[in-house]
Length: 214
Image (cartoon, helix red, strand yellow):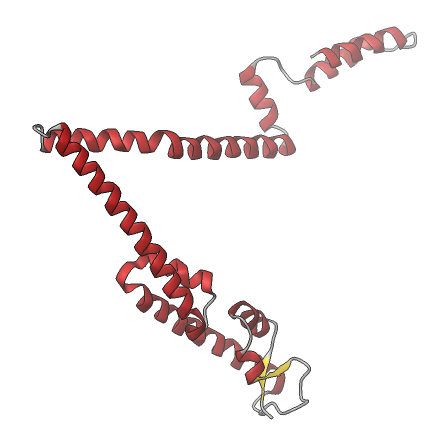
């Protein structure tokens, strides 16, 4: 590379008498990145910091290319495949029939999207009742008609886990004694704990918080 050639040229011009510039040139040539693409990759992989940066760049480019393909190419390929299957199943479909079918499909897709939105809002409204974060509750909409049942089961499991953490924290702080008012700086009244958001409540118990018995 140019910078290494310049370095060798500088060394030759400024070296004192008796200095082995040829040896220096050989060492520089070994350190210089090769111009051959295959050797360049081997050079990069031989140096941990360069290998890590190279792999990160490859992964980023792969993710970008995959995302672009999924957004731009895949939908069109799926559409082409569906059209091919339809033609095999119904080769005599007229343009009018095709138009009606496509309109029906658009309407069905719209109704599904609206139903999903309504289900998410309904689950968000139920979130406080089950003690779950509203956004997490909305994610259960993908379970369709069984969404609320899955949300309820998740909430029950979550409460069970929190109760276990609460009991463990209480035993660690007080042993078998019942915590009373003023016995711990990390104890809070149950009403205050109930008023917390699900995230706040989880963090409270994870940090050793316990309910205060007054």
